[in-house]
Image: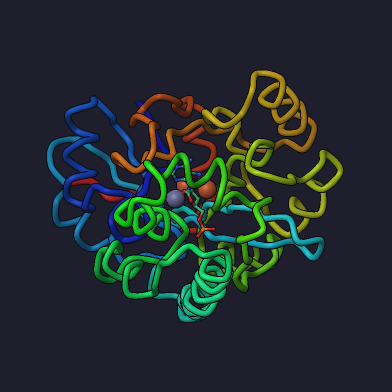
Length: 281
Ligand code: AMP
Ligand code: ZN
Ligand code: FE
Ligand code: FE
């Protein structure tokens, strides 16, 4: 089983990179990608933890914003982690998540919800990319809500009055940077309409021009109609199709391997990186 999208405590997952590798092994995953939000901080621990015949794909999920303000997540896989421009791009996004969080907290405070930056820091593992799930955890700890899921259905939803965007590259910029660093670019859950506004089919051609390699088709946030229209787009634009779990440990319902990538599709995608970077023992 090939699962190309998973998070750890280096962003908003609840498994450490080591625990993720172990979970993948016990689930029978053969190829696993570690894709924390805007960070490669988990790579080294995952590599050290590697056992058996698991193949490890090092990557990141880059938070992007289109000029129209649509949130897009771009998976970068198999890029050179020592590429300076890539690390600068990731760092700029991580940095901007701090003032963004302060703004969201201020809006919540104005509405009488007493939560502080310290509460959020406490809910966040050290070194993790700061995100709304940590704010959700802080709201749970303070008794305002019951779960992350409840937060994303209400208070912290993209359409909520408390939502603030952070600085982020456009999808085109992220794709070009991933490719410049030798990796492959996969657009994640592009039609997950319940999260907020999404791209439309005509938005994909410019992404292909920028270097997009693949579309994540099978993902729990896509309905079967959404998967079908993504398949049509992928066929038309000759893009690879992937499937993945977007596992977050206990931070989300998603189970490792619940959606997977066809081995032939993965072979084609892997061959598009500028060097063989899959990590194996
Ligand atoms: P942010 O990047 O800070 O805007 O937070 C968005 C992240 O929250 C997404 O990338 C998801 O991984 C996570 N997320 C979205 N919906 C949920 C949910 N229902 N439960 C837990 N985490 C979620
Ligand atoms: Zn996440
Ligand atoms: Fe995502
Ligand atoms: Fe994700």
